[in-house]
Length: 513
Image (cartoon, rainbow, N blue to C red; front, top):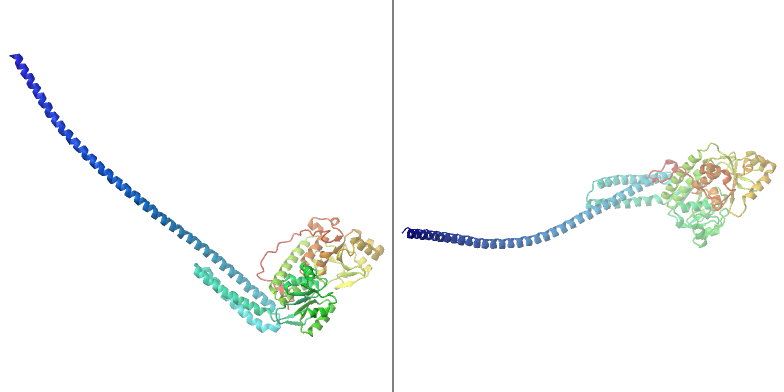
């Protein structure tokens, strides 16, 4: 009985277990179904999320492309604007430089007009006209000052353009005043007589090499139609005479008047020291042809002649600048020569048989003094003939002979001739004893014997001959025959002249008619 009961109990327990398991399985199944349902739902939600993310990604990608495109356009536009601004800035800067340069140039022109006016006031015949011109120049200066003030405040291209137009108008007014100052003009030449030049000369004849050099130096070479036989500088003079551009009117000492007249000149230039030129001037006056005789005695006359030629030919500004530079160069050379302790006694001989020497009152005497020498014949005036005994008594330390063209003679022959002229007295002349006799030929000769713009170079040559120690040379190293082929003029240490000619010192006005 107990066994059956135990079986039924076991079956009951088993049934309970089965029922429990079934219930648990059912619950588990329900839970699994619920989880499965949630998982399916999650998958569906995830799919929707993924789809949304994909859509968003595509939208973001599209937006990125749009933004990139727009940014590219903006960047390109910014570059264009930046480039345009830089270009505009450069244009403004360039325009400002241009206008500033124009204003500076115009200011210089007005100042130059004032300088020229001061020189022209010496012409009493035109005093009333010059007073009126002075007022016009002052008005120009006032207007220019006003325009320059506007320039300093201008910031835009439009403002600068307005300033430029004002300056252009002023420039036209300056040119008008320049024309009024040029011609007609009256020149008082070396004889003291007034010479009227009605208009800018187009056909000029030069009777002396020095006048020819001055004409070319001031920029009037295109107006010259005739020159004398000895005019040979600058080098183009020789070529122009050879090709017929310039007509040879014969010796400047005895000019061919008929040939001069055949050239129909409107201006002829001679020099005061040549007697025949006074006669030529009188003849030409009968034909209404103006002739100017230039002063040619002293170094100061060289400066005056340059100013006269510049005024008479319409090139006064160039002449003023040339004289300013010459004065500065000569002053520098004089300062250099003043450094020496001893000044040699020098005889400047211009002709050998008979002896002609250079005295005071000549540009050659002035150049000798500037070069640090003492003229042993300063007791005579001009160029004078002296006897051999006068040379022996002068006892020069150095003799300089202007020997003319090369090939005519040589210094050995000149020294021999001097010894023959002096006899035994030559042994008391230091220049002959120490072999310091220099015969100057060719281009170097021309520099010494012409009152021309080459006077500074002539002083350099004299310094080299009188004071070779200033150049690191010894007298024994200087040859007796002095010409470009035998003696190259060494560079002489002189201060450079680079300043602009803004204001010309008053000495320039001396002697200007």
